[in-house]
Image (cartoon, rainbow, N blue to C red; front, side, top):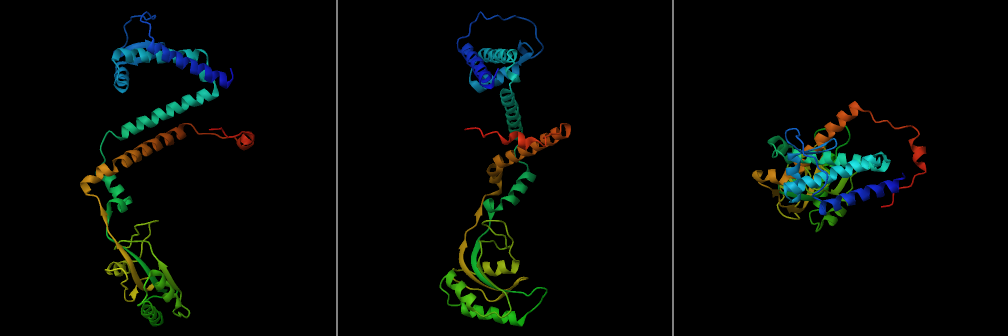
Length: 309
């Protein structure tokens, strides 16, 4: 049977099963027999437990009796598909495999939600996502830095003199762009001078926008000491050199109360638990069964075309 016919046959079985559910014949051939404890019905080698009946009844909003009939129909349809060897078709086998994988993921998702977020999980997320829940007031600045020469430490009178010339030159700058233009115009001999606008940052130097970076603590402290847009710092020394800093704006902090963070992070924590559990399953499965790919895979797939959505 080709793939199109196999899929069609499976679709017909599903439709027939659905029809059976809605037009159930009470005279269906059913045998009354004693079954194992907790088993409500058996279809071939498939046991239908009372727990499963309860779960289906609750999920579908139906009576337990209707849930039993639905589950029996599903089992009969599955037996019919296997009798026709539909499960041997590669595409259908792949679909069945995908269903099992989805069930596993749903099980891990439900398992992850059994217990509320723990203190250690909240601490990890607070540290990772501090910008969202524990953000202090920030400074947004432009600065000019006379950089230290490689391998030097301590005071450098010539570099400090250049930085003071920059401080004087930018004193009357009206905008950040004007600050940059004036700072770059100051002669700086053999020294490197860096003039740039920085992303906002908090007092300890962590940036609050874009990639996580850490600015020098003396620089960050000097910037946060500026109170009003347009204020300019005196020459400030850091491990990188000597800076003149112009405040563009101060930005307000953002805080979520510690007692509210469990609710804020809950879904992300559950997702992280699920990913960890799935990772353990995949690692164990790879240890038991090593995936193998033939060296001829690329040539074999070369003539295949991508599926049309």
